[in-house]
Length: 153
Image (cartoon, rainbow, N blue to C red; front, side, top):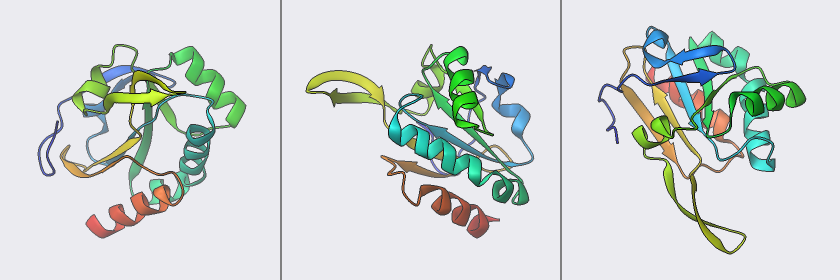
């Protein structure tokens, strides 16, 4: 798990935009948000909220990238159905989820399971962790992320 101010290790993975490489994002803010599953209600709202705010993020020299354990094919369908304008990374191996410590025991429909706890990480242009949100509630979250980038810029 990374601490605020620490360099974030390079992470890579397949995405809807080709091969994702975190190190290649240096020089701009990166909003790396982890969500449980494509095509579920809260995840859809969150992705659409981030998509709607893409122009605001771009004006702040920031890129939004979503991560879940779904396949690239599932991500592509999700993007097409919801008209999403953000890159989605497939983390089937759970490498990114493990690096950011977002996989936790959960209870779903009364049964214990392992799943992604909705979390967002703000990485500064030098590749350091600038801020994190864990256990995210979707309403108002995108605005909070935008405000934090403005505050730290």
